Image 1 (cartoon, rainbow, N blue to C red):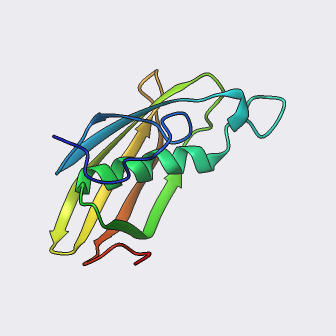
Image 2: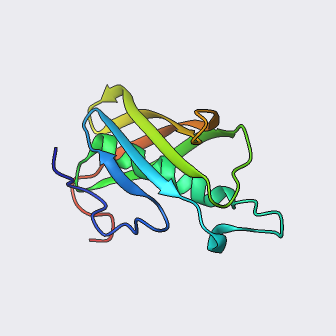
Amino acid sequence: MMQRTHRLTSPELVGKPVKVGPPEAEVELLTTEEMAVDEYGLVHGGFTFGLADYAAMLAVNEPTVVLGKAEVKFLKPVKVGEKLRARAKIGEDLGRKKLVNAEVLNEAGEKVFEGTFHCYVLEKHVLE
């Protein structure tokens, strides 16, 4: 399916779409040195969250979709150089509100993040 939302998202910072919905999406991200928070190479959780959020937006794939709330768990640390894959799927479709379940796996197939994203499809762009 063609990507209808978040089309200017940086693949280097938030990931590259592999599958676009609805009702499912997948996005991959290769973590880099710029994402590290310390000398151990620990990746800032915001990049993992951003990857999952992007996958959730692509699962809905409406031009005016926005995130209203997220309930998430960080399960394992992510290290620079790891390739992550986020998978998201609409769990409940309540019309303009969609509850999207997302998870992020590292290249070993271990779940590093999971969450539910409350996505809203607005009548017009949030900045209009």
